[in-house]
Image 1 (cartoon, rainbow, N blue to C red):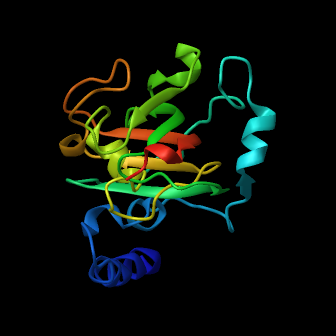
Image 2: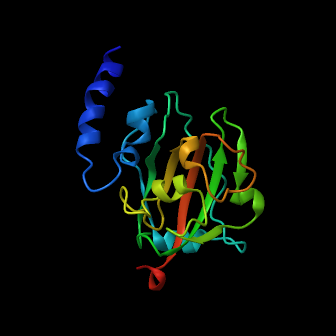
Length: 189
């Protein structure tokens, strides 16, 4: 009860403090959906990604999401699971990610590990789901992801429109775990 009250008391302040963009994508997953996140995320340097990269371009094994318990209505929220130290992905940048997409029930819907290759796209061009771009901070909303960073992004059906990531059903909430592997900085605007 006390934890719920604290979240309800803090949430309006967080929404009001997010000037300069859509407040809906500035709320962290752990705050909105009561996900337990322990301590500070570890740092992963851009060089570490290069060393761990396999011949197919993927790094490491497929992650599992931290399943949210709250209700998500018309929002995109994110939580940094591993902090990155590298180039930032902003609008116009050509970004390469690896991802795993899950339903609210925890069923894997799509995965770059399953496909055997990472996904490369240009941020802000509608080449992927709008919620993914918002969650990565690539539309000037929220902090842009840095190379090496892993984020969990929870996307309501409203922002799951656009090009899909594999076999994602329409009108579904998505839970994405995304690693930013590369940013071609010469393409950024």
